[in-house]
Length: 374
Ligand SMILES: [Fe+2]
Image 1 (spheres, rainbow, N blue to C red):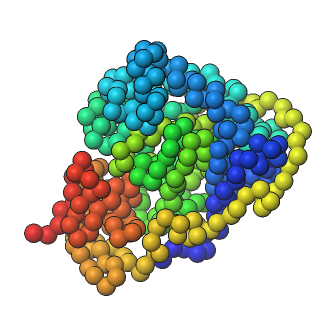
Image 2 (cartoon, rainbow, N blue to C red):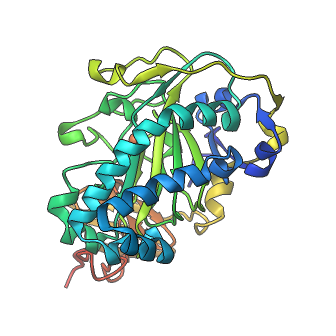
Image 3 (cartoon, helix red, strand yellow):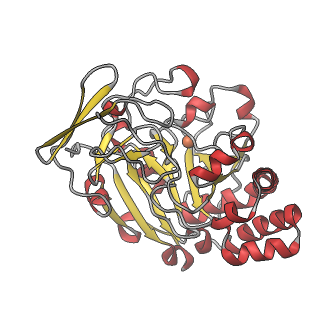
């Protein structure tokens, strides 16, 4: 059962309200308490959408020429894996990273001042992360090109941002440049908010038991998710047939405290804000509890549970039926007894790959199935 004592709210704010010139007065306070904001059409609302897309377009043209670029834009960049080689994809990502870095000076302050409505002093991170996460089979085919860049072309495992030297008080913008669907998006574990989450070997958590249920997001183009970087989060291993195209940045309303010196050089003070009309989140958006939000896409949490059988097996019990399945995820070997059940499937806590407890089947044949007893 979900922990109802979790006080986190998920706020959905329609971009039209911000486009009309209204600003949120208390977004930073809510984010610092662990709340999560979804600003629908956020990039459009602050007039950055066209410029943001032009950058990608120009980069693609440079890599593959005008005609191919036009064709790929026509079918949608979420289908880039069908039309670009792994090497072209990696070079496209590299170039886009460089160009978006130059754009951060415009983009991040605009989002902070106009979308978030924050007017006080603060800092923003000049490094932009552009993420191209291909469908898993395409990822595997080009692995040597993609795995070199965790977070850019390699899906990120379970973490909090300060593990990677980012500021402990950083607030993240996570922006869908192409549609984001459950199955290749971002997962956040709200129950872990404010609780210690220690890093073990190989940037994996030292302990990932008692994680609770994560929440995941469907976003349309321009939608902007905003959340605190100390939320435990990870990428969903891409089980869809769409490439995830997401741009992320971060800002801080206090002097950034970083664990690695070189990351400090990337932070720059925010420019002055212009006065604007402000309203509280309560007036501009709609709040949902974690349970309400999950109920919009996941079956009601049953009294299902997962138990350890031995070193190789675990047992899933749901709706009075018990099934024994292999204990370790076929992707990177995470312990599935620390995973969770959702819509009748057993989910890995690391990258959210999921299996049918009856057959061991993964979302499709591109993933190795889980062992089930003969
Ligand atoms: Fe992160």
